[in-house]
Image (cartoon, rainbow, N blue to C red):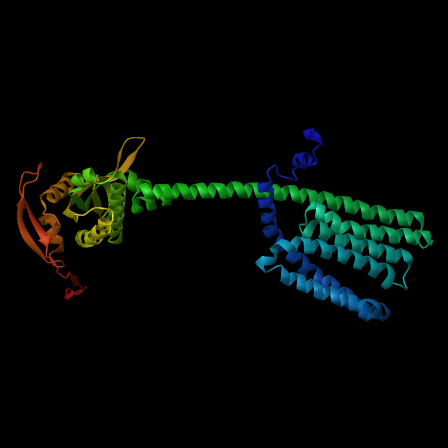
Length: 457
């Protein structure tokens, strides 16, 4: 078949149909959701008009009220019911078909009322003019307010427009209307009909374009969300929050700041890597890093690096923290990490990791250069300086399952966390031995209140 003769292709040229059926189906569902509020407004907006018609018949034309009041009352009640039916989500698909049927019934009722029931004592020209005006008003709802698609709108409007035209023809045949009167009213009716149809088509095209824009926006939002989630996985939480806020300067430009560094290492990881399958090793590493990172995050720290099996965490950057608080938080995070490892080891035994793994942790506090370091293509937020090296050296000299902190960190936590001296450690690059301490096993941290009184927590 010649594509130019294909009706579906012609519709696509007019912008009234999408090429893909799936897209057309999604559009119709979207259109129901967007058109439902307009349909509801149409019902609510027509209620006062029909109520005024009823009051006018009762007050001004009792004979017409005797003949048609029951029909108008029934119609008003039906409009109320139709309005209520636009709210349940399960009935959303029936909203536009019902609005099309309702508009058709409203038009037929309007033609009957104003051509045969009301204004009987008035001139035929008056009745015909009022009938035409009423039909045009109802047509306005069918073609515009209800947001009915053009095809359904034709079925909703054409019957009562044709009925009104028939009534004008009858008036002409009975010589109640002159040819000029009947033809001018009919011309006005059909001009309004064609104009309303054009408006309906334009609305449909605009709706489809709006749908396309919404789809593009939704796709962009999904891509943005996926990008944010990807960035969040590869960037520490605190750094990600700065990026999300647009505060790039706060993380990009290196600054000298006093922070506490925590360096951990999983003892025996190299031997484990040679003994287990790569899939098992991947699961162990991911679960270990996830658990340790969560504990650091819970204590206000930031895991800046994953050096093999040893995470490096910063306390006091990028968000500032009182130096005493950062040191205390680092020690508490270290204790929580050591307490969590046996639980992980029990889980890993089911994977074939028979020997329980242990961890060494070193902690030091001092002034470091903190910020983003790397190349134009890849940057890492971390801390560089001698105190980061000291934390790493303390970790290397630590006994498995223990925590070592330098004297600079110990002075900050000694009033709140009981510790024992562990001698001194020679650190490469440091010209003096570093006194080290270890938190007491099973000790309870002491909380210091604002008035300086210590309480055990």
